[in-house]
Length: 113
Length: 371
Image 1: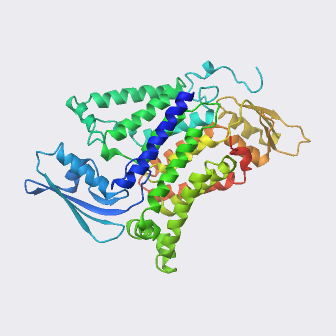
Image 2: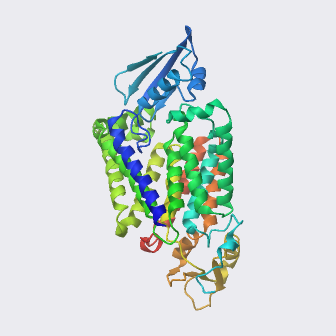
Image 3: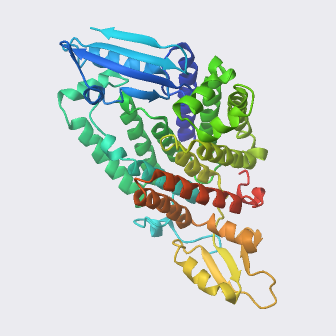
């Protein structure tokens, strides 16, 4: 019983560390912070001078590429950059994301291999 | 066998409808089964897949032999799920199921969802909890969820000045009640008010949950907070709203042993019907004599007495099938009106608020008594 309790407490402490760690990085995973940011975004992916449709880009990343993101937009930056640097590194894709967080001025994020 | 004993644990094996005399407290077992049913209803099984853009890059190694990772996870998931529902090694099953959820979340960034992650956390901690002790791990988990949410908000200037709420409700959701009310008030005043109510609510929940004396009040605050949120946004936030409602079952004061019920003849047909829901045969029904002024009287093995509508409330909240039927009914409504979400929402509101108002008059200390 005590061992199980100890494992449970350890697991909770890992979460506490994760919440603290999230303060120092722009992404928001495993820190109980959903729906804290609203970002309207649109992803544009160009491969070999051909622009992918939203359906194609959604299939590529298995994540929505247009609409509202209720967590940090950096979550999407991480997702896309990790994909393009691993599975898609030979595609030489040019990715740009137009986004606006919490109704503020439009910004652009770009990625290219 | 005394009144507080219902037989040995072997009698509950291979009986999914049984919640008593198992290595887990009945309400926590119920919570676990409902959570698993919930994620299954949200197609979790099909989300068990090979790694794809994993958090831990080492997971990509499994992609060298496609299908192995997915198949292994699915097989283990089915085995653990079956064991849980058949009341076999329930605590171990919950630990395994929770672990599978974590692996699934870690193996795919696109699949990361807070409302699924919380299920994994709760299943794991439920499996690590002892049936005879206060579910302290679950209390700490719930407290941490709200504290984490508060910290994320209080350190964000857009929450402090109401910008997030205003943008969310006016631009993203175009929420009619918010737009209507905010027009009558000074600019961003309503957004500021809602921001601070949310933040202070989360902070107070996270702290008061840890105080045994006031824990029961916090449960109602949580219920009210999330139900109001659902009412005004019509959003379940994935299935986070359902997650919280189900997790709160862990805090029910579940009566031990058999419960004696005396009823007047006028409601005998209802009691016979209710007997069908008593899968654990926990209730002992008896006709009351004519001198009894109460039409329903419930007495627990520890001597607590409930009468009339309080007895009905206690009865319902001591019956696992009541919660299971509620869950199934909700799923049924969604399926029936799948393309008419407005109807689903309206029906949800009617049912949720009716239940909330019906159970509200309960004497809190007798139902959600701090363990």
